[in-house]
Amino acid sequence: MELVGARGRGGGGPMTSSTTASWTGVAADHLFGLHTLPYGVFTDTRAPQPRIGVAVGEAILDLTAASAALRPEHAALFGGGTLDAFLAAGRARWTTIRATLRRWLADERYAEVLAPLLVPAADATMRLPFTVADYVDFYSSEQHATNAAQILRPGQPALPANWRHLPLGYHGRAGTVVISGTPVRRPSGQRRLPEGTVTFGPSTALDFEAEVGFVVGTPSVLGQPVALSGFADHVFGVCLVNDWSARDIQFWESIPLGPLLGKSFATSISPWVVPLDALNAARVRPPVRDPRPLPYLDDTGIEPWGLDITLQVRLNGTLISRPPLRTMYWTAAQQLAHLTSNGACLRTGDLFASGTVSGVAADERGSLLELSWNGAAPLTLADGSTRGFLTDGDEISITATAPGPEGTLLGLGEVRGRISPP
Image 1 (cartoon, helix red, strand yellow):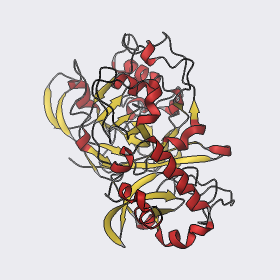
Image 2 (cartoon, helix red, strand yellow; image 1 turned 120 degrees about the vertical axis):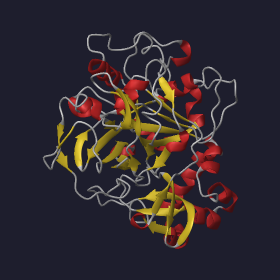
Image 3 (cartoon, one colour; image 1 turned 90 degrees about the vertical axis):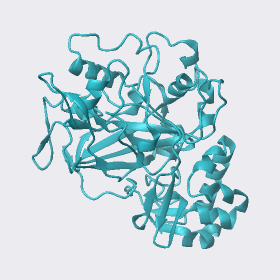
Image 4 (tube, one colour; image 1 turned 180 degrees about the horizontal axis):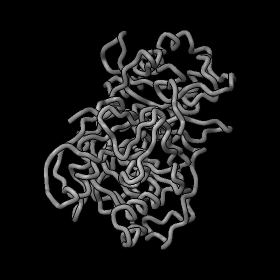
């Protein structure tokens, strides 16, 4: 296990190269360099109102003020205190504004105007970046599904009969999606004890799930499915997700309709939304599907939307897992196509998550359910303590990186949460 020391506020600490590509001094290979430029919402002591920001190294560019000064025709997109208007503006605007930002930050002629608008990230408080409209979570890691089946249903088929035919998911609670750093109160609910007694009380099997979230910008029309080819027209970018799970509550309530109270108490997201345009170098072909998906899910022969994102999960500072998103059986494009295949419409601010990301190796599992094998094989942390599930005071931190252009790495920031008593 790795004991983690001090970490950058956004998970974007500088790398070894001193090469710069910006008058700001940020290194070209910084995780939050000009190849990343994620969007978020922040406040600081200079101004109490929420503003739109763009992460640039260890600083945040106040995009609300910058657009008012340099591109007033775009100022309305960044003046509302959330990303909502910008998300709704659509693919052409997203691409144009990203190119404009890169030009501003690379060309010294803009330094006089923009330098005073760079806020140290350490001085900022991050806010929920967009209004969450709907929240859907999927179940798309074959290894996670297999591990869960072996733990909970030994001797039975590892995957449900429908699992290889469609991306399974559940509709979550948008109102309990919270920004990274928000304390997570241990939930109470109904559960069945091993001897069969049914009781109500605080969960004793509180867990995390390491996931990647996809943020919808452009809405769709009710009754009109979104094809695989429409993914990038509707999805603006990605964030990190911790889908907190009370396993004892979840397992008792989940037959036959699926999770409710075991999931709905909190879902944490990272403060930075990385645009899809930053992830071109991270695109990979997903695993071979067998059987071949039905036509509306079949991405054979088209540019795939698998993503080579590697997550890092830390429990109280100890690195406990490195789940790889590239191994996911179903891609986000297939998830979106299936989500809308019955005519369900998208709204600006919809969030859908990959589902728990787990790889084949023991140190690639994306939940304590798998890492401790439902508590039967507790983890040992750097301080010598052990965990089957989370205890009060525990903090989970999830960070992630992905390949960027010209051999760089880009960062997705951090989502963290500490468990507080019931």
